[in-house]
Image (cartoon, rainbow, N blue to C red; front, side, top):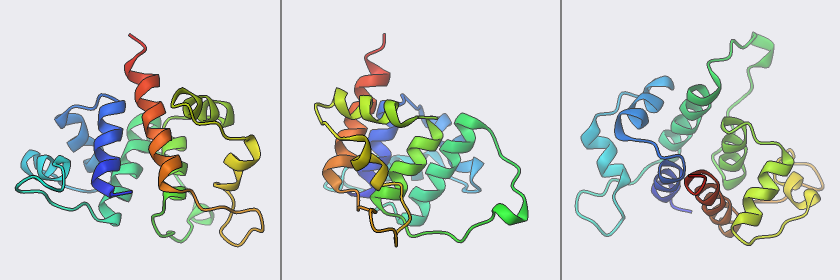
Length: 156
């Protein structure tokens, strides 16, 4: 999926306003002006569109975790090497930020009319070298983001 699309969908699903988005970026050490943010939120066929790189999306997702759950003091033993940004990583970071359990993830996917078994879901969160690890496709991530929109925006 295009990183800008992920950013737009998360923003819409969680009803995040511009100042909140800027604050979330700031929590992960990124200074972002409103103009820069608006350029990232444009569609790729619009004027002034700026592509969101993997590092910036990852910093937004890390900021979202801090925004929703608070900053965690890590011991040096907990520091781990950064992994490349994939759909699996995006799904994992959203799961952490939203404090979702397995059932919450499955129910969110079900809201988007997408059925997945517990085994299939857990395969996305396994280590890359594990024999049951599976790559999360764009369709699954897209359906999860659609389910988030239904879950959070249609509660009213």
